[in-house]
Picture 1 (spheres, rainbow, N blue to C red):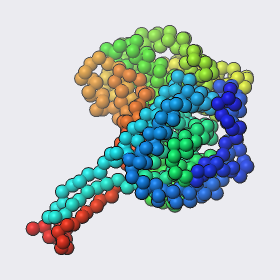
Picture 2 (picture 1 turned 180 degrees about the vertical axis):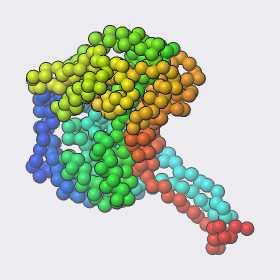
Picture 3 (picture 1 turned 90 degrees about the vertical axis):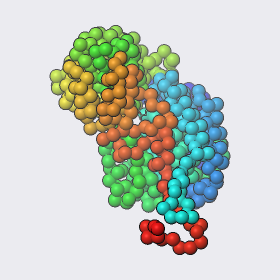
Picture 4 (picture 1 turned 30 degrees about the horizontal axis):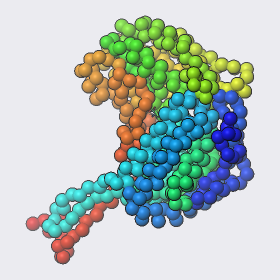
Length: 499
Ligand code: UN1
C-alpha cells in the first residue's frame, strides 16, 4: 500500500534544496496499525545540523529581501498543492501515525488552512505608527525576521504542527531548520517536496531527520539558530528551555495538557456524550488537547456514565485506513506501556474502571498497537490518573457538587491547555470563560478542534507563554523593531527637548 503512494524506500535529509544521504544510520518507520515497516528514516548526526544551518543562514539573507507579498505567493502555491494532494497525504499520514483516515484528512486540512492564512499575512505583517514625543519626527514599530529558526515537531500532528510553525516563519522572512519526529517523517518528506516544487528558494527550508538527543540538541546548541519552537513532552521541553535560557535563545514551548470537560446539571447530556467521545477517544487520546478528565455534577453523574458506556460500545477499533474505524492504534510499544501503567495506577488509587483497560492482541504486536477505550469513574481530583498526561484513550470521571468546585478541579492541575463546559446557563458560560485557567476554552463542545487562525497554547506547565497559530505565531518568529525618522533637520533630544 505504502509503495503505491511513496516513491522512496528510505528518506534523505533536505539541505540547501538537495536530498542528502545522512551518515548511514537509519531507523524503521513502523505503521502502528499493522507492525509493517513503511520506510527507513535517517538518524543524522550533529554535522547535518551544521550543514543545514549554514545553508539556512545564507538563504535567509536573500529571502528576507524578497517583499513579503511575494514570499506569500509561495505559500499560496503550497496551499493549492496540498489541496490537490490531500487524499494522498492523508493516507500516508494514517500509515505512519495510525490516526483514522477522517482525522488524517482533517489534519491535512489544518495545514492547507494554515498555508492560505499565513499567505494572507504576507500583505499584512502589521506594525504600528505611533506619534513621536518630538516635533517633525516619525515613529513606528515593525516586525523583522529573526534569521534562522529551529522547529521541532511531534508525531501526533506531523503535518499540521509543522505548518503552524514553519509557515509563519517563512512568510516573515526567516529560514528554517526542521527536525520532525522520527516516528512520522513521511509528512516532512512530502511537505519539503511541496515547498520545493512551489518555488521556495534553496536553503529556506531544511529538514534534518534524527533523534532529539543528537539532532535536537545540536539545534538547541547552535548559536546561529535564534529561535527554537518545540511541541512535545514536558521533560524534553524543560530541558530545551533551560539550555536556551543559558544561551539567551528565544524558545516557544507547547507541552500538552490534562484537559477536562465539565458537565453541569443543566447540560444537554447527549451533546456532552458526543463531545467527550470525540475529544477523549478521537486520535486514540493522543492529542495535547485530548479530554482525559470529565468533571461531572453529581446530579447527572449516573446518567452520564450510562450514556457514555452505551456509546463507547459502538466505537470500532482497528486500522484507520478502513473508513468504518473510529479508534486507531497507539503510536508504539512505549506508548502502550505508559497507558497500561496508568491503568494499574488508576486501579490502585481506587478509581472504578467501568470499561476498557486492556491491550488488544496483547500477544501479537505484529497486528498493531491497540488499546481499548477506557472509562474510570469516582476518581478524585488528586489522583495521578486525574493529574498526569496519559496520551491514550483513557478518561476519568470526577464527581463534583457545584459549578465553583468544577472550576476549582479544572484549574487544579499543572497544565493549562484546553477546557470545556457543557451548560445551558449563560451566566455560567461567561463565568467559566473568565475563570477556566487554560489557553483554550470551549462552551458546549469538547476540548479538541482548535482553529488555525486563533492562538494555540496554554497556561502554566503547558508552555512558556508563547502561542502557535494565529497572529500570535508571528511573535515567535519576528523581532519587534522600533524605527524613528527625524525630519526636523536638527538634532532633537528625546526626553530633554520636550518644550
Ligand atoms: C495537538 O494535539 O498537539 O485542537 C494539536 C486540536 C487540533 C490540534 C491538536 N486542531 O485538537
